[in-house]
Image (cartoon, rainbow, N blue to C red; front, side, top):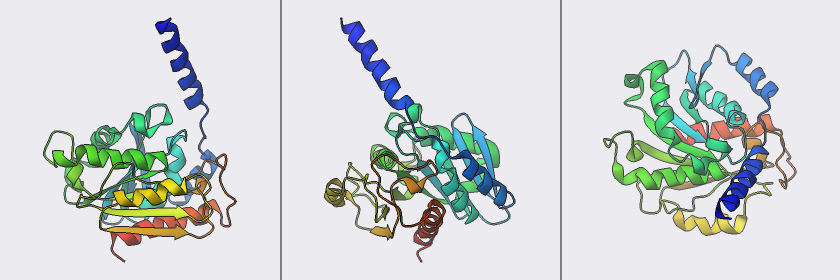
Length: 255
């Protein structure tokens, strides 16, 4: 009986996660072609690496995808950030659920080194980011690995200078950590539980910044169409992604 129950639960989970939001490959391909001289991307079994071209690297951004969203749907944002000088690491999550792959950054960090060499980013600042449930997972990674420091095996929690949350909030406390936080939210987002979002402010570190994208929605932090239950956008997905990339860049650079 127990075995049957386990099988049924596993099957139900696979059905649930199998019904995910697919990436808008056409929109991403168009942007990749447009930025082909400015950004090179590399596929690996662990995810995708986006490298700026013809400019100095500014920082490294690791981005955790939202739940039940194909990870490549966030390539549009990654291209826009790489265009601005940021190395972007976009990890592939087990069953498209970031909380099942909280430590994905560790394996993708090793994969990234195969392409441009470990020494090229040793002196750069690192930032961890995520959309929706991916932001929850990113915050959990920081909390779980912070005390391990930068020299403990493949863990490097304190390597991260900040966390960027897109339509997300931390359920684990970052309040006592020496880390920066940027929260970006669309004004027309109907997916985020705003009561929980407001309650989460007690988990924010001292150095925290909030930015509201006017007319933005939950779904437009990626290229995967409209998420069920989301609000009505007053801007396009391209506009929201452009603004998001600019806000992140300005925040990192202290503008």
